[in-house]
Amino acid sequence: MNDRLPVMICIFFFVFEEGTNALTVTSPTEINASLGSGSTIVLNCSVEKETGDHVTQISWMKKNETRNEYRKIVSYYQSVALYHDPDMKNRSNSISFDDSSPSAILNISEVQCKDDGRYQCIVGYINSNGIGADTRTETSVYIQVMADIPEFTIQPANTTLEKYSAVILSCSANVGRPGGIVTIWKQSHISDERIQLGNSSSSVTDTGNCSDYANLLITYNLSRSDDGFSFGCTSKNKHTNDPAPSKEEGPRTILYGEDRSYETLSSGTTPRNLEERNYESLSNGMTDTYSSIDERDLRVGEGAQYEYLGSGETHTYSSIQPTVSM
Ligand SMILES: *[C@@H]1O[C@H](CO)[C@@H](O)[C@H](O)[C@H]1NC(C)=O
Ligand SMILES: *[C@@H]1O[C@H](CO)[C@@H](O)[C@H](O)[C@H]1NC(C)=O
Ligand SMILES: *[C@@H]1O[C@H](CO)[C@@H](O)[C@H](O)[C@H]1NC(C)=O
Ligand SMILES: *[C@@H]1O[C@H](CO)[C@@H](O)[C@H](O)[C@H]1NC(C)=O
Ligand SMILES: *[C@@H]1O[C@H](CO)[C@@H](O)[C@H](O)[C@H]1NC(C)=O
Ligand SMILES: *[C@@H]1O[C@H](CO)[C@@H](O)[C@H](O)[C@H]1NC(C)=O
Ligand SMILES: *[C@@H]1O[C@H](CO)[C@@H](O)[C@H](O)[C@H]1NC(C)=O
Ligand SMILES: *[C@@H]1O[C@H](CO)[C@@H](O)[C@H](O)[C@H]1NC(C)=O
Ligand SMILES: *[C@@H]1O[C@H](CO)[C@@H](O)[C@H](O)[C@H]1NC(C)=O
Image (cartoon, rainbow, N blue to C red):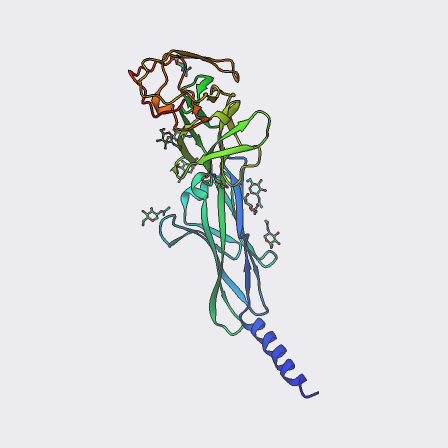
């Protein structure tokens, strides 16, 4: 019985607080809109009054894109809306609050890039004690623009390339809004998995037409395992659903020759002059002709490997050091 009293006091204060201060204002926290005349942004600021509250004015404000400053777009009074922004007056309509409908609505019907940003609704009112107060809410509007299909190139463009040669992979796209990235990848014909080679790190925004351009340039060293891989690029932002717009360059054949072992030759002391050898690759049908053995590719020790040097290259050496085992 004794511990009931504090509970009752609590409830009493709760009700009292609600009754005096708690006019509530709601607006959408987030609105996604696309560009164009077919799209609308409905900024709905809705008030829930407590007994005795009297709403005097509601305003929709827009935050400056660079400073923490709000500018008034429309003021609403009982049944009347007053525009402060002539451009907005042209392409929107407003519905003010009245006794039957406690909402102030700004309905933007020709959505433009500059409508992106933060909005604030401020409700000015007089409470039951005759004290003036205001309450506000924030709404973020995100203008969405689709990411475009990227432009993608490989240099050199040859479909047959050599192991250890470098290719320049270049991609650029309008990644839309909010800003996104382009990603360069490679993919084998036997797998759905795209192996990412890099993401763009920044983009250039054109606020005039809501475009956001991202570029990525990668110098990529081909390896033997890239044989049969395609290369491509994808353009996307956080609103892009899969499959994201992408461009692909068909599979590349990588000439890699075969690694070949040589029997160990006796380590003599006589310098040997010009070697003449032909090697035929077993792996991808390529014939490599070498008029000599490049000493860079001779390794000390038994079971040494001879690495492919390039088709038809001629390497001339007057001697090969006798310490090298072949
Ligand atoms: C505005 O919001 C209120 C409260 O959520 C809702 O009752 C009303 O229908 C909305 N008005 C419009 C035009 O969406
Ligand atoms: C935002 O603030 C800057 C600096 O005061 C001003 O030049 C610019 O016109 C403002 N933007 C809008 C949309 O009012
Ligand atoms: C509003 O529209 C009228 C007629 O279409 C046009 O003449 C005027 O320049 C527009 N005002 C603004 C601020 O865009
Ligand atoms: C907003 O304006 C458009 C075009 O004027 C209209 O079709 C739509 O019903 C309006 N929406 C609201 C909630 O007033
Ligand atoms: C790639 O193509 C160019 C021009 O067609 C040619 O000169 C070059 O030898 C080719 N490179 C390879 C690695 O096939
Ligand atoms: C690219 O970015 C995504 C996340 O956006 C990340 O998961 C991925 O690892 C990045 N790829 C590279 C190659 O940095
Ligand atoms: C946006 O403007 C840039 C130049 O500022 C232009 O190159 C680009 O094509 C435009 N994009 C669209 C989608 O209109
Ligand atoms: C590509 O090869 C060049 C020259 O052989 C080397 O300097 C570079 O570090 C290599 N790049 C990568 C990413 O392996
Ligand atoms: C807006 O788009 C983002 C990203 O796609 C999503 O997470 C969010 O839920 C959307 N918000 C609304 C109100 O639809």
